Image (cartoon, rainbow, N blue to C red):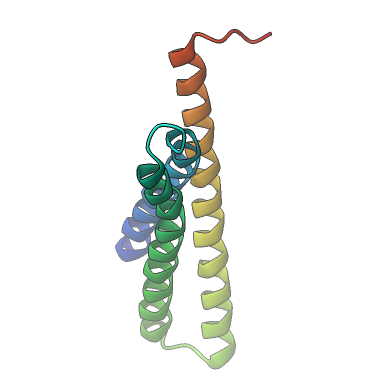
Length: 113
């Protein structure tokens, strides 16, 4: 069963992952125009990963503490929720990278060939 806390945290982790993927590639492109801004955007991907991990860790801790089952049940819940958050973050990180690639292609007027 998914609680509203897990659902809300999944949405936030997905948005943070999307931002991280977008910032990663945008930082490499911006490096040519403004090195400081490019460095900041490149670091933003790591900051997004850290914020997403902390949010997921806090959510897992609250859910496991409130479960009230045995040690094996709590461990299984912690591993399952951690994997869920990792997969959501990874998918949306890649989605952010793909969106940036499409926007860059359209913006520069590049064709598929």
